Length: 97
Image (cartoon, rainbow, N blue to C red; front, side, top):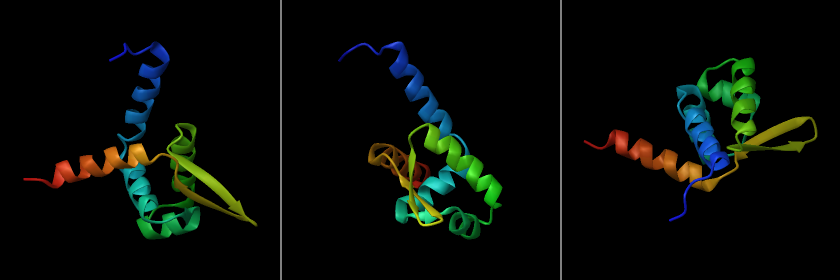
């Protein structure tokens, strides 16, 4: 196993920070099921569109979600299956008695 360089440590830390917020977890969990636009996410999770946009911006900056434009609509989906696997395993761990 290789030693971790400073850049890798910072990236890993930012990823875990991104996953430490309940709203971002809810958004990622929803997006793991299907690609969604901001208004759909806001509706499904009972959040304001500005809250969703802010959280998506943070997730996108940390390369956890990606955006696809179709006309005037922007659709979001997970950008990394590895992170989704960690999220799902953590959810499973939390539900396990």
